[in-house]
Image 1 (cartoon, helix red, strand yellow):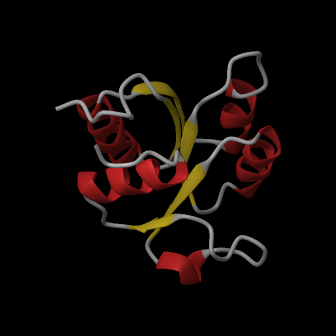
Image 2: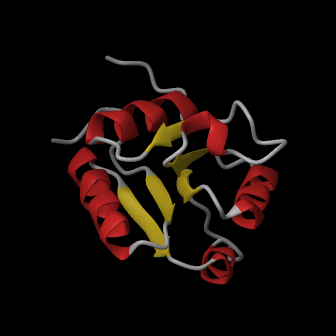
Length: 121
């Protein structure tokens, strides 16, 4: 079921576990989002965002700080996913939006709505 405010939003996924990445793709599509791209490696993600097109938001595995830095410079809101919650973030990234693995579709939806500043209708 599409979520008002998320419909058509382009979301980048950077996740090295293919099953988790596929699950995220399905969740995003169910919410009405468009998957901007899915990358398992930092280099691939950086290449995806190097062009003229940019995502509206990103879901990042916690260990891809070079991608987070690039997206942050571009002003793209991001959400980290980690098995350690906020405590799993590197110094300087504390307090950034985070979902803890294992997460649910509702957790992903809420995090995206928060970083995209979408109010519930």
